[in-house]
Amino acid sequence: MYSNSDAVRAMLKDDALNTIIGDTFIEDPAERETKIGPIIDSAIADADGEIDGYLAKRYAVPISPVPKIINNCSKDIAVYNLWARIGISEDTGEKTYLNRYNSAIKFLTMVAEGKVSLGMPSDDTATAAASGFSIKSNHRLFNRDSLKGM
Image (cartoon, rainbow, N blue to C red; front, side):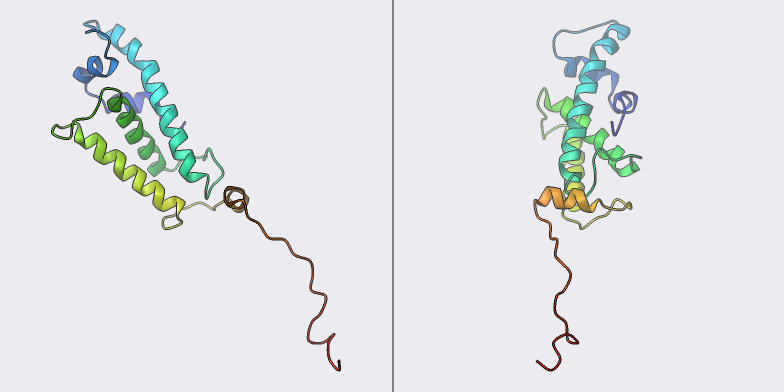
């Protein structure tokens, strides 16, 4: 996992939990935390799968150790996934989650295109496998010296 439940939970306000859970209003904070936990884990798994889809073009996934920027992308995408369960209104403060999601996807797209590096060596075999193209050739049979006088 590129992020963890505690980090994603810290990005959510307490009063938003009932909205995200969506079933009914849960007054007991402990019960609310119990219900939101699996939902957050699912959102993180979806976010990490999306990230791997972009990174697999240049790196062997999952990436370890996790660069801080990938951790941030995972949290932003996971929080967006949580809010997307109920719909995000562009008129409210929830638009911030959409903007952060779009920024994370833009960054991941640039990584996939090779415009931005994660600061770690890329995996050539992963690149070849992702593109479906690789080249292998034999040693040269002829060169200038072997063709002299012909």
